[in-house]
Length: 530
Image 1 (cartoon, rainbow, N blue to C red):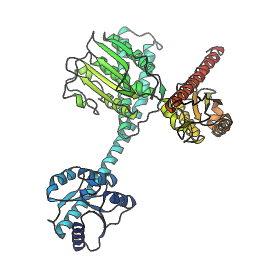
Image 2: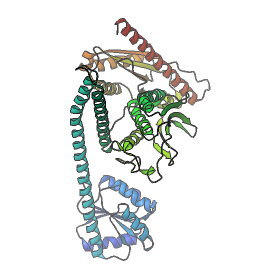
Image 3: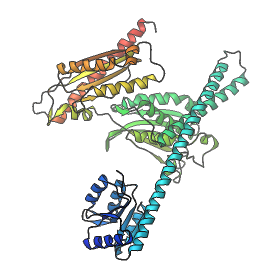
Image 4: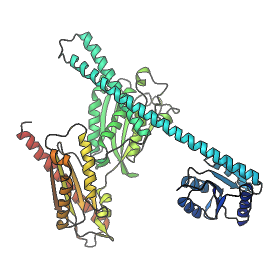
């Protein structure tokens, strides 16, 4: 809500000090409206209703003391100037408050009306200047992001043409190519690929800084993504005579993550490891569980390279950082890869770090959350401390009639998820994350806390909702079916175990239907001669 131009909130629990400050305020500014509270909780409630033009704050209150007091006020009203009213013994704390965002401080009993007026005036001016600078900085960032995004997109078109025509020449489609010409063309392709990678990194870094980078998590087999990353970079490792190996823990369950983004993190880390490892060295990618952190999978990339200095280790994840000790070949790029990897790890709810010693290689490790069907389903399939009497599984399959266009698959997924969320009850039903693609189509599962009669009603509701979308109706075949989920009889079995067993049953049903659909899809392709 908008604040009155002369609305001052005084937060002071000592009645004598409060009356003195009121008197000083009336002397210096007769038209000021002063609201006085003696507890921080009352002040926060008041600011939620109407933000004042200025806050006069005592740091020691009945329900809050010291630094926590001004931190909570600043978090509640970040754009409001705050002047601390400090005791003689609290000047050090008051100075700390100024360094952390408070505009000024006054020592109680040692200021008159003019000093109070001046402190309030300067505090409001400084806050207005900071607000103006913050707006200007955001506008500059927005302009820079728009400029970089525009330039990056514009560079992609000619770069794609260069890549295509160089490939045509290399393939000999336009005539025979001499060995010298082939060498030049291969250099051209490598440069084009490097520039393409830089453009993608620049776009991702711009999105990350502006908070626009997105992930689409689903249930994935993390070992499969690691195998893909290793196969992509195996040729680069062999070219440098570097061993590239994997150590995968077979116990790892499904992970809840975006497979494309995880692949991006892995390629970045493995590529860096190969780049900084000398010939005859080795790079090992490991996947494991850690007993002390049972909710995450740990992925590490270990190399036998030259290592990272203690001074450089805290900086390697910063945007555009490049190790000044790097040789020419290792300094190719913009220094954005690790910054993007860190942002993607954080978006997944994980973390990333490095351990290294000069001359002894480096170990980059990141974590991803394990998928827990039981944790996801527990709020929906339980009620008042018991498992619900009936649970059903609804499967929604979408198959393109003529194939979806490039880029349209992501749009269709988003649209279908929005429609399905409109058809379910949030406190009783759960739309499960994707558990693997099926051919060229998409499969979705809804766990509904109802019997088959109620599930039948939901099936009809979902069909009607999907049929209303003209794009889907003309381009996609839709199948919506329901089946009951076996509910384990209680018989004094702990609720946690009942939920886990029900979740396991649902997982088996989902994977079985996906596998069946894959087999049918493969048979259809075989019959069609594809």
